[in-house]
Length: 296
Image (cartoon, rainbow, N blue to C red; front, side, top):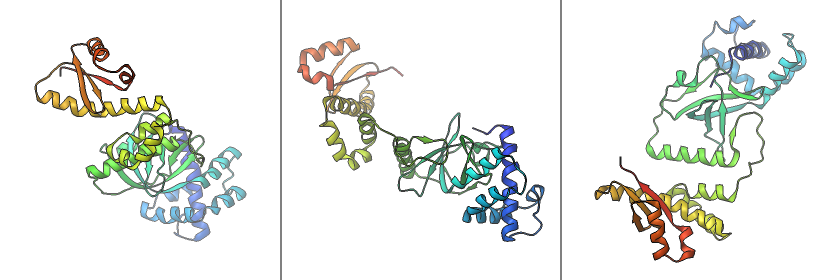
């Protein structure tokens, strides 16, 4: 979840001069003339320079043109790519092996970014309990996304309803754009199959209500989607049915659900399938969802 040590050193070697350059252009803080000077000031002071930089992204172009620190062409290309920064509030949603998920807060269509940390992991900075809301600036770094070394967390606790909404936003972002791992992003949404869309629409009660018209349109489109609909709904109904079965003392067995109704049971899957052949119209069997109740 972190940039390599070599790349971290490279980032700071490029980023701090850009801050020094910005400070000189606007005379924000006296006493900052070199990279080392940056380290002597508090985050609050550096924020003034950093915010001015993103208010005037044209500074990156002028830095590129002037090259006041004699960087190589490849190094200048990295700096110039920072014009594609993404600044705002994000939800740190999940820690994964290859990156941390940053979910946008303000976008009409949420986006999920796969972001690498620098010297310290995000978990070390904000803790293991997620989600956490932060202000941050995301930057491209070659073919990766990093943050600009300043992270401002909010002390906000999210209730169950908000957590559910955040999870829904993540699912929508992943469905429409995928996990974004490089900048700039393409405005083109990823192609999504009808089956993927239907699964998302059926994911929870809120989605099923919001997208009821879209669900109806899809299941009327072809039989494969109708079968998928019944299988996904059967999976949903089975969770409640399983709880009820355990409440009355059942501990093991196989069960069949059709349109929310428990219609058959047996000791094995084969036994349940045989019962279905005997009691159900053949054209209906493909809509049945079969699940196993396992002994805990």
